[in-house]
Length: 237
Image 1: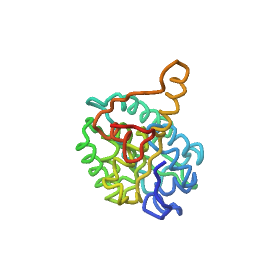
Image 2: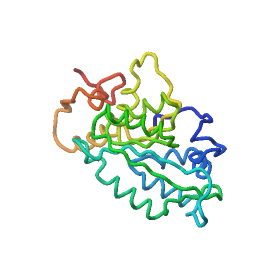
Image 3: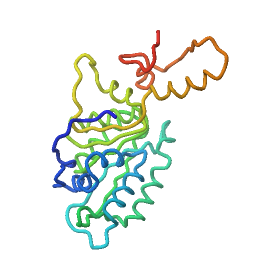
Image 4: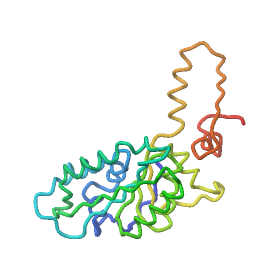
């Protein structure tokens, strides 16, 4: 998991001084970061509900506003195909209300389409930040997730993301690996390329072969993550 150092920040305050911070306080900061990401937005909100209890009183206080980036249209629409259904089920289950530390808050989830375009993903993320959401959620591919995370980092907006191998996320955002920049506001969790290698290696070992495997990778953040700067397996180009 590419993580940020522990620090107090709007939206993820350990004291829960904002609505999103209250969620983190209810679950515990680490658990909150692990379960609240998108590719699993349902699991995240369900965990919040299970940990804090469904709201039983009239909501008061500042609304909890989540901005959810989704590939609803375009070539990557398959990644976001279930998102609208997940959101509808969350709203139905929680009645647009969530209880945090004994206080009921209105829950607002804003689902936005990236159009499967990296530039649009970044722009939509900026628009959501300008609209004062408490937390951004992103998933899909590095072309969609990385621009959102970069915008969030620059704006000081908490952002949780998933469904991108961590190498493509981390090294795709570190423009100069020799001078790594810390991520203070953006958090990512997903498996890495080393896990793919482990799975396929065990499969290949079952068949007689010369232990030499050729790979062809696209010249994009996903493909570029394989050979450099820290390859999951030794590759020669």
